[in-house]
Amino acid sequence: MFVMKIVCVLCDRPFTADTSQEKKLRKHPYRIFLCPDCHQRIAHRTLARQEHGEKRVHSPLDCPPGG
Image (cartoon, rainbow, N blue to C red; front, side, top):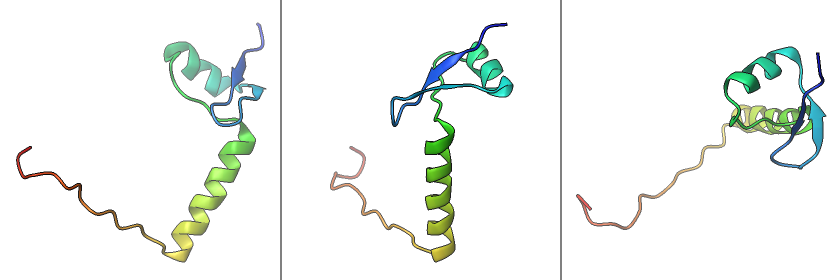
């Protein structure tokens, strides 16, 4: 078997995929994958934001109703 190299979409560094990622990539070649470092960083920040209770309130767009 060959080793599959994947490029992270955030940091553009190549990394090797584990077996579950290889299977997903073969079935869906246009999926986006993150390297383990970027995935860990995003997961850490998401958990910190959820624990803090910070919620962003987005205002609706200024468009007329029905348009």
